[in-house]
Length: 304
Figure 1 (tube, rainbow, N blue to C red):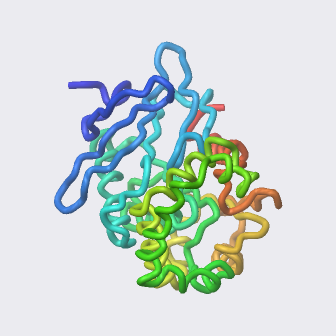
Figure 2: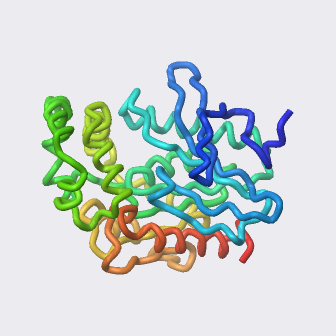
């Protein structure tokens, strides 16, 4: 049996190795009606060599320098959102499936920290609520966990997420295959080349566009009242990062912070620099990585 602390854990299947990246490409196998999911796995450092980075969603987007991580630290990240089912209940089930596999494989004494960005924060909140005894900490980055449809972006875009627009838009996007990367870079000058390549890959995938728009519609419908009770109950395990201006969160920030007004010192809250937007992964990955690393240190999840 392989050592789960120094190699791929038994609940993951190996995919073709890529020597150009610091993680292991792996497959989380299918179970019941949930299809297999492509994931990234960072094993612990070995032989004195440090794991150079980590990611949430994509390693180019979010790197955490892990020089302080212990020999028994590792990171798990979905490589991409599954396009099999776009409903939020499915995303919760899949996240719980992963969480339970991690807990079972590494044991009850393992400290598991969850990080979620945007609607990923809402999914992380559900995992905290349903697996609270096994969750050591949760990092909410630009959290869209209450009334997304009422935010400025929600009001502007929610109609475009309703049927039949996702299907129509995903099919029209096929013509974008004629647009070269150089033109896309001119249209989005703030995007570094790697991010522009990821954007182009997304725009050339009708199924990805349909999945994103369909799930956004589900978010508008179902992410409503704030689950203040869960936030209050587990406030000692929670960290928040908010943008100075965020049209996906907007007044939701004050609604969230109101939960902790009676005892503001119990939850860690960071109000980000005015230049760091909701979509931080385009140009501000390092800043958010540094903040998450600081939280890991202060929570004694890693050594300084």
